[in-house]
Image (cartoon, rainbow, N blue to C red; front, side):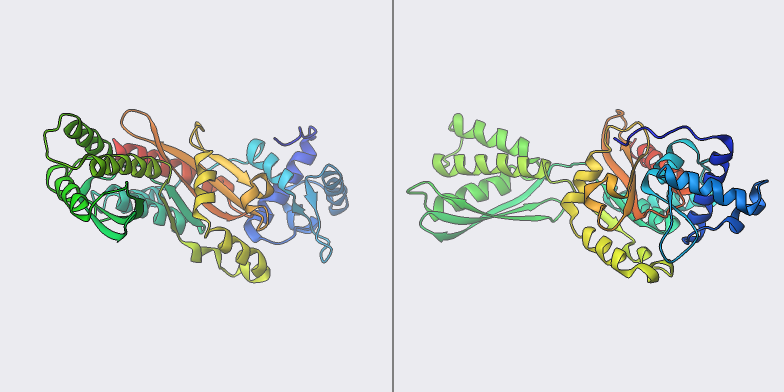
Length: 344
């Protein structure tokens, strides 16, 4: 948590808001003359207020410029207590909803919403998809040696899982083939959990002439595959190219670091998971989140729900700290709400 910030006078609050808004719009240090038209103070008085704000840790100034930029603490104060959020326009809302309505597939709807959000916000769009248990289509084994085999599991959606499994002593290739054929023929279309339960029941009641060791091996494997899949969230990332714009040319090292960070899907997924319990948007600014501390990036994320009001995923954007928060935060919130309606 950030340390409490001191109260600002009305004059300090006004100058601070103008500086932050000008910085977020232009991406460059802001001088007294730039905000003078918006406040009834002389440039000298504005500079004095800016100095006070700098002493309070809300503004800083690059050594190459006399202008000021907000610190991360300043941006947090602005986002939490000063900015006036603007609802997405009709065209923006329509663009997000149209991308979602192009198909009946959950994955394609999520990818479409994320791509639309990325394009509208000029950030990288990210979405953590609902955890869905694989449904079996086929199981086969390729013997490797006397105590190992390669198990090939094919789902109804075409996904393939390959695992090297240890074999109990005496397990023959014929026994493995028999169990694989049984699973493919009799358990196709079932989820991994359903298939495991059915297989264990068949073995226990000896309804099928299945090799017990091979059957138990497969049942244990199905349970492990199911557990692994539940702990491996699926992440969709769209629009990394949006991060390389004209403003980024002056800070290519930061952009390079951010693009490298975006390659770590597991870390991004863990970050988004932390927003699952939020009532609305959760905002991470710069070093508030360890993952993006080096690149000085911000993350805005919001959970979306299914028809039973259960949180099933998280959608958001990742971009530079110089975001138009007043515009992007409501846009992420709207996308989460639109996904929740679609999931119903």
